[in-house]
Length: 477
Image (cartoon, rainbow, N blue to C red):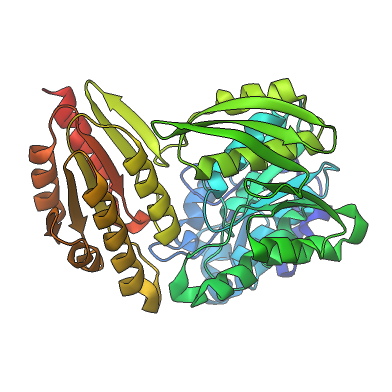
C-alpha cells in the first residue's frame, strides 16, 4: 500500500501541522487501533460509543504512526499539549470529522486501482452471498472481499485499504441501519456492479416499515443508474421491489427461483434433510449444470443463484462455479451446523430479524431428528413498534411446526421481547428466561443424545454463549 502527500491533499482537511514532513513520505497503511498501528502508517482517531481514538494519539505516535488524523474539536482543545508537552513531530491532519475523513481517504486510495467492484446490499444473506461470490470469482480472479461483516462506515474503508496491485476485482458488502448509509458507502467504493439479496424486515426501529427498508437498500441501484451505461445490476426477480428498481439500471442480469423470464433460473429442485440440489439454467447460452449445496435452507439456494449469476457475467466456467458452490461451507454463526457425537446444533446466532428467523425455523422443521427438536430463541432487536408483532409471528409459526412434528418440539425463549413468542406458541413444552445463566443451566440439562437444537437471536443477545455451553457439555460427556 502507498499513500502520499497528493492523496492526503485530496481529502477535506482544515489544517495540516508539520506539512514539510509530509512531502517525502509514502505511508504504508492506515490504522484506527493505536495498539496495532505499525511504523510508517497513518493513524485515524475515531470517536466511538465506548472509546475515543483521540485518547491514544500519543501512544500511536510512539508506536510509529507517521501521520495523525484528528478532529477539530480535539485539536482546538489540545493544540498546546500536542505541539508542546507531547512533542509530536509527525504531520497532523486536522479535519471536521475523522470518520468522514477515513471514508474520503479510502475513496482516494480505491481510485488508484482500475478494477471492477461489486457491491452487495440487502436485508438478509449479505455476508453468505458475498462469500459465495468471492468463492466463485476466485476460481478465475484474485479477489478482494470484505472480511466477515466489515460492511459499515469503518469496515468498508478498512477493506479498501487492503487493496493491492495483485487484485483483479473487489466484492464489498454494504450494511445499513439508517437512511443514506448505502448511498454514502457507494460514494466511497464507487461500484460498477451491484446486487441486492432481498428486501425484508430489518432495523425497523430506524426504517419504520418494509417500504423504508426498500427505499434504503434500493439506493444501491439508484447509484448504479447514475453511472449510466458503465454499470450492471444483478436483479433478484423474485422481489417485486428489486425488479422494479433494477429497471433504472441500463444493464441488468436477472435471476430467479420462481420465474422463467430471467437470464438465470433453476429447475429440478430437490430437498434432503434441509439441504438442496438443483439445476442452474443459463438461458442466454442454453447451458445447464447441476449443483448440490452443502448448506441448509432454501434461502441458500437463492444466495447460490446470485453467486452463479455474478460468475457467469464475469466469465467463470460453469464447471468452476459448480465446484465453488458445492465446496462452500457455512459462514461462522450463520446456519452453521455442528455435528457433535449424536447431537446436532444449528448455530445461527450472528443476528436475527423476522425473515431470517422464519428461514431458520423452516430448516429446523425440514431436518430429521431421532430425539427432541429444541429452539433456543433470544430477542430480535431494533424492531421498534413492530417488535411485539414480529415476535408473536415467530411463536405462531413454531407452534404450527410443533403440532405437525413427529418428534417433541421445545421452545426456550430469552429476553424481554421473546415473551411474546413464548405466549404465542400455544400449549407446547416451553420455558422463558430473563437471566442468561439460568437459561444456559436449563438448556444444557435439557439437551440429550439425538437432539436437534437451533439457537438464534440478535447480535446484542450473544446467543453464541448458549451454543458454547452446549458444545462444552457434549464434549465433556
